[in-house]
Image 1 (cartoon, protein in one colour):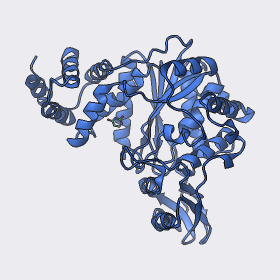
Image 2: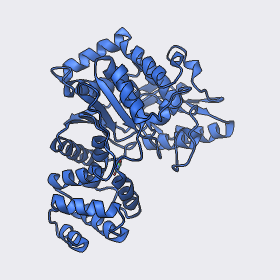
Image 3: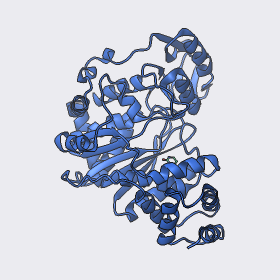
Image 4: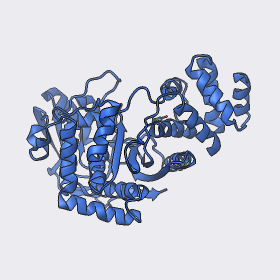
Length: 433
Ligand code: URA
């Protein structure tokens, strides 16, 4: 087999076989295929696409490049979720204990944040003492004992993705649906769970701005997952404004706790119930996603979901008292209030810019090596469709120092667009696949 021929075949729109894709990935990972040839192949994929058969074969070949987590010693079907990332997306913090409280077995490997979107691991680490560096044995033991564990993704999973993504990042080939889908699904499958619900976000604050592209990505990932023999479903959710009201690690933990007590923002609560209903259904714990949602609503109102979150915190070395006293979470020394500049309905929010403002305050990373400041971020007091009088509270900036708060405040006001015409609240979930 010659790499040249495989590049040529894809350039001409041909379909590569499983053996050819395995050859490409294994030889690329061990250094036999140079970056310039792999880059040319990625560009050919970018323009010619891949069939579902090829996407699945590529995904399986990528998984074979590294370690696979074996969860078979834990009884029952193990469930996971994955979000393509967004601003204020603290869904996992609420959803996972909620599903575990309803009897789901949740084994979750999560990532850290980069750019304008946050990461679950960074958020959890703002709880004093919380450990995310569990060993595989600790992870499996904890899932067996309390039905839930959340740990950082190990570097040993899918090394092919790390190498290929770095190349795509430098060769303008990141935005290829088959390559994105196989990158995401390979990591999820290698993590060993049986059923996965994907939250694919679209809009200004999402990785995929365009709804049609997000739909295509969701369909491709579900198809790969199902062809690989796992249970997959996807939800398409709106990311044209932040999810909930809080952006920033400690602020998002506080909002997640409030939501687990049944008093959270309606959009966040609804998304967690939708995703959770699907997780229970895929795990065989409810007859339909809707009856799964009903089970979960009961777990919110009974306090069982909140109790499960405290159990999770305690099991991973954190202080479970944060659940009852939010003042135990890190607090920013400077809090600046931003008022509405005019009367009107909010018709649009620059979601991505809010994520960048929060990142620049220290809530996220511009570069991998940046250190997160857990206490900083933004708290909104209004969303799209809300009416405000001039001078009403619009948002808060939580900062380390006055100059940071000043800079963020100036940018933040421009992120809210007002109109004198009434505006409907946008639908959060558009499609379930
Ligand atoms: N996220 C991933 O994990 N992989 C991609 O290719 C793009 C986004």
